[in-house]
Amino acid sequence: MRTWADRINNLREINTLRNQIFVGFTLTMILVLVFAGAFIYGEVSVLLKQSAEKHIQQTAIQANGRLDVLLKQIDSLTTQVVTDSYVQKLLLKEAKGMPSNFNERQSLLQIANNYMAYSSGISSLELYTLDNRRLFPLDDSSIKRISMNALTQADEKKGRIAWVGIDPRVSDSVLAIRRINLLDNSYLPGGYLVVHVYREYFNMYESETEKEEKNPFRSRELMLLSDSEGNPIISDLDDEAAKSVLAQTGSTVTLEQESMLAVRQQSKVADWKLVLLMPVEAATEGISVLRTAIFVSIGIAALAFLLLTLPLSTMITRPIQQLMRSMRRARFGGLRVIPDGRNYFRTLEINELNNTYNQMVTHMNELIQVVYEKEITQSRTELKALQAQINPHFLFNTLEAFYWSLEEKEESELAQTILAMSGLFRYVIGSAADNDERVTIRDELEHAQRYLQIMKMRLIDRLHWFIEADEQLLQVPIPKLIIQPLVENAILHGVESRISPGSVTIRVFSAKPGFATIAVIDDGVGMDGEALNKLMQSIEGVPSQEPKKGAGVAMSNVQRRLKLYYPNTNERGSGLQIDSKAGAGTTVSFDITIPPEGDGLS
Image 1 (cartoon, one colour):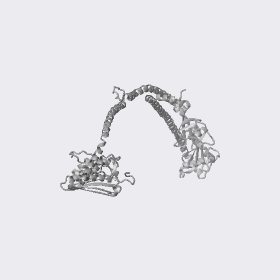
Image 2 (cartoon, rainbow, N blue to C red; image 1 turned 180 degrees about the vertical axis):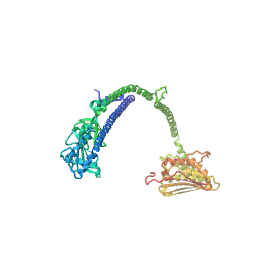
Image 3 (cartoon, helix red, strand yellow; image 1 turned 30 degrees about the vertical axis):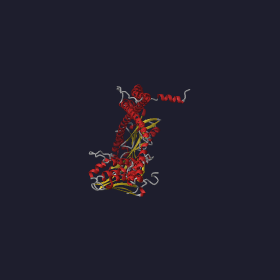
Image 4 (cartoon, rainbow, N blue to C red; image 1 turned 90 degrees about the vertical axis):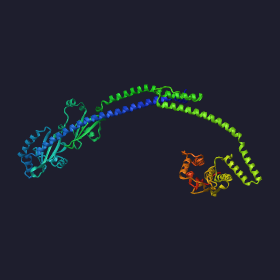
């Protein structure tokens, strides 16, 4: 039975770069195709929906225009009625307290019939006085049968028509009311004109056959016209469904669990609302075909990409496999350069990888050769060092013999010089454990003192030297052989250049808290500004156009060692500082940090 370890090993065997490229490219392309298909599907769906919305929007605008025309017809007709001279005369008599007789009221019938003949939508006209008496038709009905809300609307309109809504007595008619202002009595209210209009009068559609012939979409459209209070006037829905639609907002409403596109228009003449509805499925009939086309396209593209990715991944990974084989051979037969064969399908990155590998192999072969030669040289050097271990002891023993011989002959001055030389050699080439490491300022000053004693022996009265050091700074650690080169430079280029005797002074002091300053001062010939600039450039490693033999070499070495032992400028101060004037001598100084107590040399 296969274990998990076997399955993991099998997975590792197929986890190659070629397979990763193959799978990665395939998945990437499939994702791209899916996202592109989804994007196209969404955009086209939106376009189809917007097109349907635009269509029913135009239909709603046309229907709303026809509605306004019908309302204006009623408004124009009622305006003629309320301004009729006979109606005005009759209501003026009523306003003056002179009731109309039967014959006068009977005459209103002919006037009403004449005006109603101009509009097939008006079912009846009613005329009322301000004291709640109905003048026409001829009965004793009071205006109180009209709601106070309707009268209030008429009074607010101040003579303009007020559309009340569904007639509470006759459900198949719409009620409108208009206050009559008396033209010959300063436009004071004189009565009311009540108009009953058939509800079918506001149907903006033609017959079903005409609808389908003119627009195939119109057979699926539903229309809803409601008054200002939300009561349906004309509707293709029942009252309950119509009220449900009117209660919903947004461009999409739900009608009997079906999504409908809804377009709303508000009448400019009356405060009525027109709503046109169309099923969402009818507006997006082409989406299912589009969806199938997208799925088929994604499948074909994915299959084609699968067939193309396999040779592509093989072509990409073949040079890498060749490089891997060369690396494996390097473990057995040494590092070898990959031959630069012609491969037109090899990419720039693969070529660069091969070139980098060849350069690395060449460089490593050179390094192996250098290391091999160094090992041979080091072996020879170690052998010579073992043979020459006795030489320093022979030198020190010889100097000791000279010292005691001179002491016996009472040549004390020469004996002290030999003793100083022995100490100088021991300090420089001694085999102490801390050789070439840090020492104390005291050790450096003692070494400089021995060097000055030897130079004093050579220059006799031409050299005078002084050492001034703060006792508290003698234990501060300092790099070995950092002061003596400056003293040597002061004697060589300062004192020896004088005809008269000169002096060298070494000072150790603390000029600022936390720092120790070491200064080597001579009263030699000094330097002018140009020579000083050239020396500073030499110290900082800038090549001089007119190099002088030995100029600045010692101080350049000191400067490099200061930077080596004190990488941070804050620890070594500002490095070497030189103050010199022609004929007035030279001062060379540098600062080093004083370590906290307990951090010095042990």
